Amino acid sequence: MATEPTTTPQTLTSELALQMYEQMRRIRSFEERVNDLYRSAKMPGLAHLYIGEEAVAVGVCSALHRDDYITSTHRGHGHCLAKGASIERMFCELLGKEAGYCHGKGGSMHIADHEHGNLGANAIVGGSTGIATGAAFSAKSRRTGQVAVCFFGEGALGQGVLYEVMNMASLWQLPVIYVCEQNFYNEYTHYSETTAGEVAARPAAFGIPEEEVDGQDVRAVFDAACRAVERARSGGGPAFLTCATYRFHGHHVGDIDRGYYRSKDEEEQWRRRDPVEILAAWLVDRGIADRSKLERVDENLAAEIAAAADAALEAPYPDPREVNEHVYA
Image 1: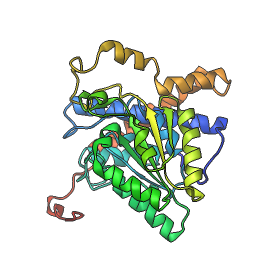
Image 2: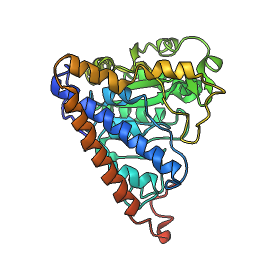
Image 3: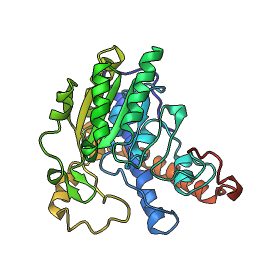
């Protein structure tokens, strides 16, 4: 089970750094198992893997309280797990089982976990930006001290709703943080072919402070997130983080022939900046953990993932008579 922070830490302690490593490894192992389930025809539909981008979700969510809100997008498994979701319930949802977060009816791109403040992933590009901003408006109106975080890819920069809600968030000084996971591709097209100008110019136009972050370094993401969260929680209004990162796999699990839009050299360069390995090397260099300790963490996680996946495979499907339950129009 994920570690659930109850207060916002402002410094990266050795204990928290180890928790971050475990969380990133958990997400990585989960996604690898999802890929295996798809390739062995045990999982219906598609999934968009978060492998390579784990530092963004873990760095940001480590700066949040349990009751703070997040909204997610296509590549949302990492966000869900980083905010505290159950691995077994995640597997159940992807496999269409009754025990899943949405009773098996939502699938990979529609997981919500209200217990941990996760208001849901959204298959509409930019679709969750309004939900997060609305949650921030609610939190401010109720004076709860909560903040909301919205994760999205740079493809959302072409969606008008993002600019409408950023305008409102700035005018009303809402406690919302917009996190752009800039992995440089809108599906199969490099973002330079679809996005004019600079990313930072967008929030700047609304008076929203923007920070560019190395999305492969969880420590850098955490530091930036802590600053944005503290500012939002204290009434300073919205912030925008641009996290440069990279998906190591394709746009979705079926996208295995990427040669027509990404080069092997480019992929290899980014794989040398694996966020999990960057943190592992730092932990070893600082004497916080040696390689044998990290290997034990990996082994324990492998067993945890295997047990959860096996349980989900054996879990029952929803009763067909419930097809119209938990469905809203």
